[in-house]
Image (cartoon, rainbow, N blue to C red; front, side):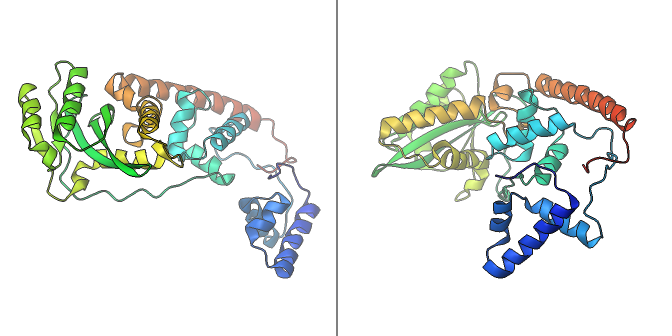
Length: 332
């Protein structure tokens, strides 16, 4: 476990020498050696730089900005990040604002996590070059429908998902035993019955399920317009394709369903979490339910008020502290 203790100038020099000697004699990687000594890489390289400059002594440094994060805010961010290690810094930022943990900007959270070796960054996939999704401005304007294969204990099942384009909300889903057109049409009919009066345009691929009599009857019954995507170009239905990837990576993760019924239970838990708890990067880090059933503008305005109030308090506390700084103390 990494220590938060303060080291004297002599102790730092001794530790730097110990790291160098251990590397030469054991051949162990630097990360292993630092872990045994309770040091982070950022602290180690900071000491190396300062040693080359001629002094390892700590000095008080005046904060560059009166809006610098307060010690209690830094501690709150570190504690929260350690409990949510799978999340990126932007999602963490808005999770903490919404849960009243800390009111900081994404850049401030980034700096804190980077400084303490807690920055978790994931490469985002490049956007597809397919047909653009129609512009949407309200829920139930455009829906996406698609199927994905799920392997459960020796056989394939088929997950049918219907996603609202505006909110990324999963309107309805069903795990089916086959790809029969009747089942796919029934899933769409149930979704439409959940949204009385809605007449969304339907983005779908060119699969055989969408050219059958059963499907055509649903389209006519609800007076819907279809938007077929380009042939052999699933990226054109990218919003639902991205959701399918999340199902595989996050919905099941390392868990393996024992049978059809457990698979449905795990999927139900995931959809509830995705719709009602998970902050979505494409939705200003709000939840799909906030856009589908709520008032996102009010929620974003509430976040802004929290940030402004916290910034005003931070400015006052930091200015008060600067007026009482002395030339002796601990480097920050």
